[in-house]
Structure formats: C-alpha cells, structure tokens
Image (cartoon, rainbow, N blue to C red; front, side):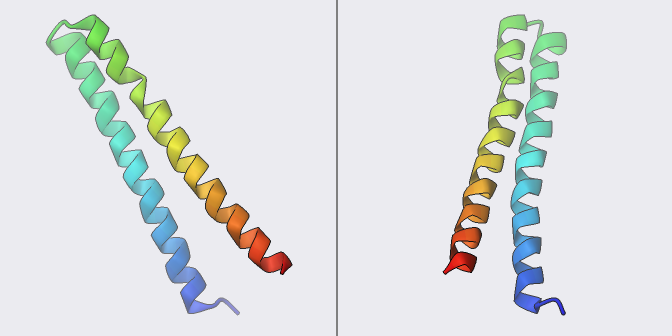
Length: 75
C-alpha cells in the first residue's frame, strides 16, 4: 500500500542526508590532512568542527520537512 510518490520522496530525502554525510566525511578527512600531514593543528581542529555543524543543519532541515508533513496530515 505504499504510494510510489512517497517512495520517491523518501529516496530524495535520503539522498539529501547522504550528501550531508559525504560532506561530513570529507570534512573529517580534510581535518586529518591539516592536522597530521600539514602539521597545522589549529586549522585541523577548526575544520574538525564542521561535521557536527553540517549534520546538525541537515537534521534541522529534515525536522522542518517532517513538521510540515505532520501539519498537512492534521488538516
């Protein structure tokens, strides 16, 4: 009883979180590069803070979408 448009919408949301996950992993890799390879510890620590921010923004956006869906279902 799944609606095909619901499945496509779920896949799209998953892709958006996937992009945030990939960006977070790239940020971790960049932080490790700066910290260990280049020896720039301060920049490595700064870049190492980005993944939490990226994932936090992705979650916030997702919660906004879920809130809109809940409001629509109440109407």
